[in-house]
Image 1 (cartoon, rainbow, N blue to C red):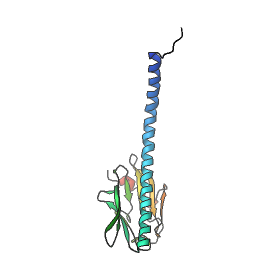
Image 2: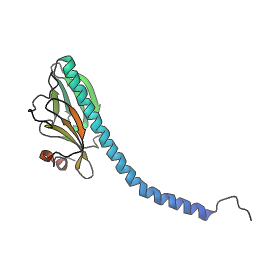
Image 3: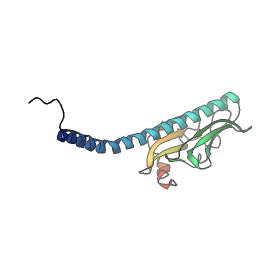
Image 4: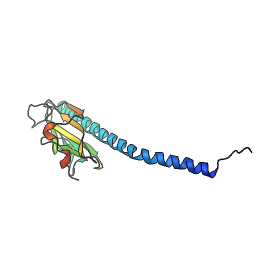
Amino acid sequence: MNSKGVTLVELVVVLAVVGILGAIAVPALHSLLQEQQGKVVAQELAQTLRTARLEAILRHSPVVVRASRDGWRHGWTTLIDRRGLRLHAHKLDGKVPIVGNRWVREEVRFNSFGAPAGVGRQSNLGSLFICDPKRLKLRWRVVISWAGRVRITDKPDPDSANLCTRWPR
């Protein structure tokens, strides 16, 4: 007898296999999406800082990137310091923890030469840490050098190793 259809048993077996594969793939996909979200936030923050530095140089005026009232994880605003003119605002949902070390806890200020104001002449002094929300450990670090250059790294900073563990939930 030639059968052109699928039996109910075959259909149930295929659906069970698809369900098992889905149950295995969903947590891995969720973890991958969280990691990518953290990387995107790090790139957006680094680009905002680079742009603020460039604006300070071009305008010959200090420029500030200030965390929102609820902290860096909810976003930041770029302002021309002397006039208080808002150049850009960036909002986040608060799901990605961002913590600044003591130099950049609330804001990053670039002087008219593009150097971070209030930061000593040490490299890698100002760092913003993008933390893994589940494990509360460093995932990405946005580093501001004493000259004002901004870079992203995933290497830990021994002086600020436990900042992610002290992140307020």
